[in-house]
Length: 377
Image (cartoon, rainbow, N blue to C red; front, side, top):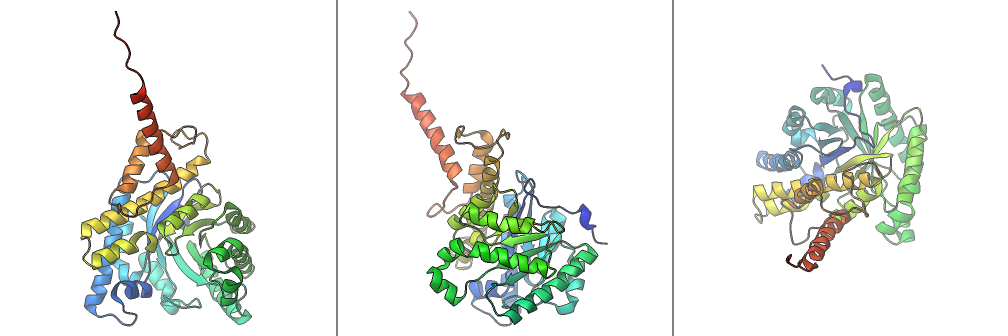
């Protein structure tokens, strides 16, 4: 029997969701084995084991819990069925995709049998990934919305919660207009995302959580949040996705989103685990080192999100503030976790961690510089 939707975890700004995403299928095989077609048993086992490494890292990173909210995994049935079962047993939030991998138009991986697959695994959330740009041709846009509206209606009927992973890829003309992806992201994507969300809402698409590309500015993020909150009949939260960006870029997106009340966590994948897994499969590091590295990166993002969320909560005694940056025991533990297993050749830490460590160094130097007190006569 499935768990009633009302008793499941509901992410919110006060209780965010931190997903380590590993639901990649075609791209996973292409990246690590250089194959895009059918896989033989040995190749399939290698891919499944690589995902086990990621899962072991997720468990290690969250073994002592998270400061707020819940940790979880986003994993597919094809390469991660056993991981999905383990996640439920281990008490992690479980999300699973239902879309077919690698298609431009949204398609169901198992066709109309997707319901049976969802019921079999009973995830906390099912997920769809959609590529949609408001300037696409009308027939494409209509087809996408109609297919998604059917999924939305089914989820509402049966009480299933779901994540809508929205990618707004620029057209060639848009890239030429804005020069590159970065300037498109800053100048155009927020308004295009808001326009997309409005079109989806008007077409009957109402997800529980919008899984969105990160924003370079708070203003851009707030433009989208206003659009999401405008649907008063179907309230939804937003989480940040990683889009395989460098960790420094993902950290910026997280630090932008965390203080905003409409955001409720993140779902990041390749940015965290791709480099360590490549090192493992190339024989450059061993399995334990790969697990440590992935765990350290994942935990660093969780702690970064929590630290920046606390910046907007002045009554929190544990919050980092610029007026009180010193190294407290809880901050030291978060920093140590973030650096555990990290690659010292290229690891970057969030700004608050650097400020805290420098404040402690300055305090120690000031203490050492004080003249020794004269002995009493």
